[in-house]
Image: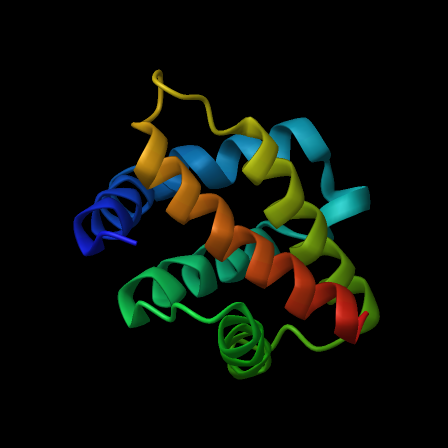
Length: 122
C-alpha cells in the first residue's frame, strides 16, 4: 500500500480525533463502549498502527494487542468496547466525504486489526 495513503488516513484521524471520539460515544453509548477513554485508546492504537506501517495483518493484530494492553484496555468489557468502537467507525468512514478510497482502505485495515485484537482478548 502507498505510504502516502496510510499517512493521509492517520493525519485525518489525528486532526479530527476529538470529533471522531465524540461521534462514537454519542452514537454507540457507553453501554456498548464502556467509556470515552476506551474509544480514545482504540483510536490511538489505530493511529499507532498507521504510523508503524505494519503491512502484515497478523503482525498488525499482534501489535494492536500489545498497544491496547499498554493503554490499560485489558478487561473483557473494555476490550469489547474497543472492538465495538473500531467496528462502528470502520463502517462510518465515507468515501469521498471523509477521505479518498486508498486512505479509507488503509484506515479500515488498521481498524480491522484493532477489532481483531480486542475481539480475541474479550
